[in-house]
Amino acid sequence: MKKGFTLIEMLVVVGIIGILAAIVLVAVNPGRQFAQARNTQRTSDVNTILTAINTYMTDNDGNLPAGIATDCATGSHSIGTAVGNLDLSAVLVPEYVAAIPLDPAEGTTDADTGYTICVASATASRLTVQAPDAELSAVISVTR
Image (cartoon, rainbow, N blue to C red; front, side, top):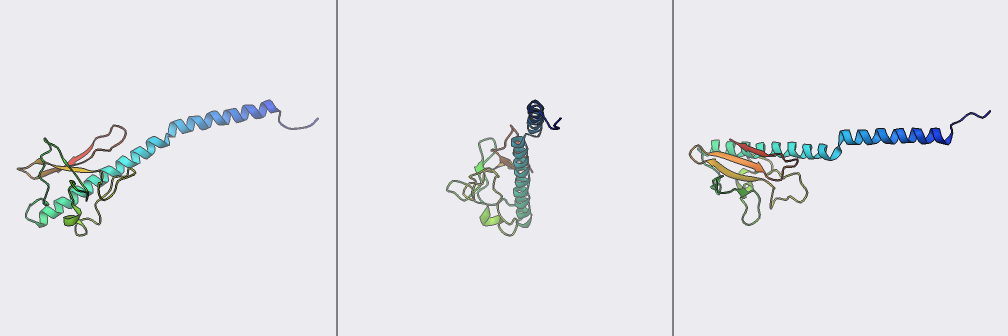
């Protein structure tokens, strides 16, 4: 009698392996993992921008960089070098930060970094930096 596997046995094993692979893919969900990683980068970037501005303010008698005047209640400035955006690189790079961070989403450039800034409290010089392109319904906004 010949030893070996029947076609049915092989199909059952391949089917079981396929089902297990599908379960692992659903459990890991790489799309969600990548989105969470991008949101973590956005949180880090927002904190980097705020830290650089706070250090600038410390060195300049508490004065904000020129152009940051929009009250959060009325809107916010997009950070970048494009016309209409707030260019922070002129005052922060390279002394306070190596480069203005860019949102990890595709298509962001120095012209539009994907981050916004506004004055949360003019009397206390509190700033809010936001990442409006956050994924997974996350709200990434830090005020200091």
